[in-house]
Image (cartoon, rainbow, N blue to C red; front, side, top):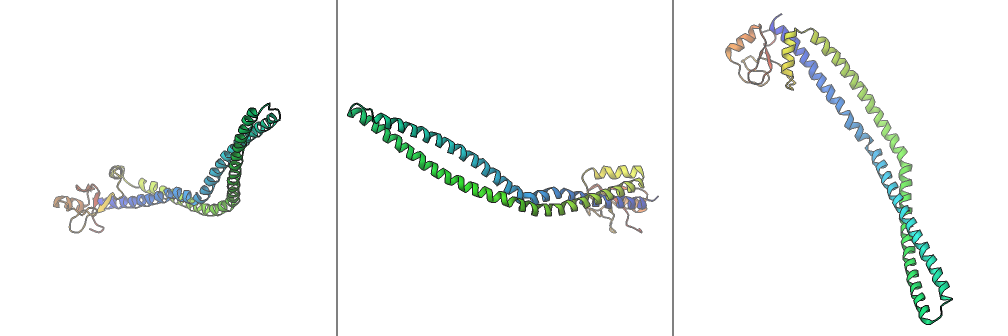
Length: 239
């Protein structure tokens, strides 16, 4: 088998490898695409969770205010009872002063509780609205997600077919040539085999190849690497 024939087999392998790289890149692209498709529903879910946490905190604060107000009401009742039993004006003034302070504090708690109840109402309304919308958002997401999953399955099947073709093509190549090919490709190259141009340059980097090496390549007896870029150089077809 001539070097040209050997190079042709390597070119076929290279074409399959390039197709495999493209198919793998397409397959990798599905994960971010799926995440992007799901983002509208995930965003609603995050907002729902934030509102639930907020509502929980507001309810805790509401109970604290209720306890504080109950304590002030109980204290006010005691002071009112005390006013009925005071023995002099001094005791009456002291009890009345404390009662006024307790009532003022109670008014403050009640006003704060009213504002808090308004916040709770608004959060509950927004939460109900989002929970009602979530199902329809997910339905739309699932339709797009199903389409992407179908496309991903098709890409996986394509990748499997290409991998099988690649394996079969590798079996048709002489072990020493395959080893050389894989060594060059291991550097992360997508182009491993290039054709020597008519004027004697590397078909990949276009650096001129020494005349003696040009002759060896065109003679079709050996596969030689480009000294500049490292790809395997082969004669042009029919040369």
